[in-house]
Length: 345
Image (tube, rainbow, N blue to C red):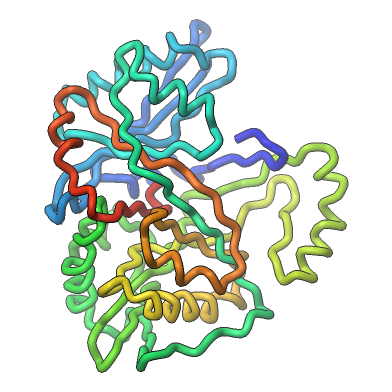
């Protein structure tokens, strides 16, 4: 990804293993030019999610990348024709979720044009990703309202799963979670001990998990523009004074984990704030510089992030469908707040 800070999204040591978390059926589409050189790629995956409160197989389109010299309408149309063939071959899903980084007007204009046989892109609002800095200097706020936070390893696993299955469906597109899934690549590396559970009066009222995927998915800084490269050492001194993580050297990895499966009964902001405080306290002295949490712009739980030092960036969430998915797209309950897992993007 170009920019003042150039990033690479790596999948070491195995592309296949890294993309297995995206869904039970994950397919990588690769475009080559006349010389056989890889010129573009994208990923089609299918995963069970709650749609209008019911488990449904729903697709996700991710990782759309191409070299600048092939970013024309013809190449895009060819890619989507092939994608449609895959879609019609199994018909496992009526539609697909996808995101476009806000401000990427070129991609947005091309993909949402509905020209040259492209599917419909229905805008479902802003999805805001927050990188919460794990500052050692920050003083945690104590839980309020009789809230107790415990490790998932201390909670009966069936009770935790029952909570996710009862509360998760309130969010549109929340992942379906079953006990056997955690022994499969769908949740690779996620363990009961990674969960934090909020209790009030001995009853579960909120859960979330720290999902570190660095063993198989990495974000690597591949370079800086000349001015930023020159100023990085001085800038890191200023960041340290502010309790912010340093910019890594070229070739260095960004050290973070995803806050997965955030689920709070009654959208109680105080409960979610207590969970965030516990994640911050438990991980601030480790090797991670931040944790990443994504919430839709309509999600009331975003208010719990107000007291944390963070960096926000926004994407637009779209539902993508061809003619056979038009009725499905039209039937979505507009009152349900959309949910995406940043670890599954």
